Image 1 (cartoon, one colour):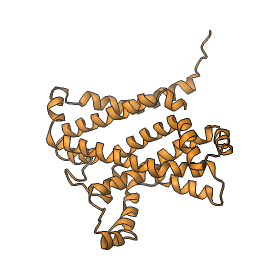
Image 2 (tube, helix red, strand yellow):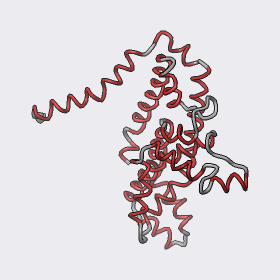
Image 3 (cartoon, rainbow, N blue to C red):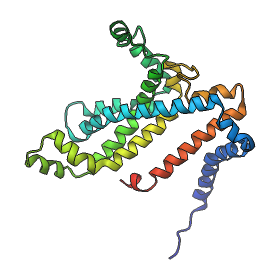
Image 4 (cartoon, rainbow, N blue to C red):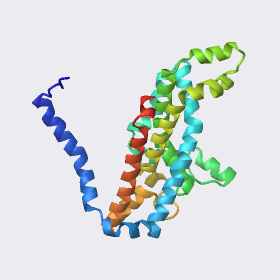
Length: 260
């Protein structure tokens, strides 16, 4: 079988694009302090940032699953006036600068915000500059990834199975739980993984809304930012951990979930 020849006008820009994307990663790997890597990975500051990042990203993913899966079902299955506007609003955090998202969260959930003032006066709950605030910021920027993935899985699934369950007397909730969710499980899993990875790497909204307090709100991206001013090798080590997580996510999504 003859392989198609690649035109030179396409091959050269493609090669340059590949070099442009991979060269910074190669530089990170070459510059990494491999001899002291084990010791640096066990430093208290790095471990604290890693634990906090894993905890907050996981909690943010749970929040996104609880809120995002029903939202994706509404967008995929129901027809109502303004659906396009709702979908546009859902995807706004994808293109919104994260710092702007953090400012918006402050204006809503801050102590003088639209909801934050009521939460503080009624329940004594203050979200900004707390670990819970990190979860809120990460969920805000990561939820669109889950909604888009689940909505795509719902649109690709056969709605006739749900209709058949309804004709047999199943309620919409029962049909969703017993029929729809098993059908779209790979899409939900893929969306959750992407959501978790995005939450793990969130920086702008987190530092604006939750601050950068070690042990409380300093996640790994924030620790990288701080380490760049104090210890370059520590910043490289933290970056390597995030790079390893990203590569692992891509490897996990490569076959079955992406195909679904």
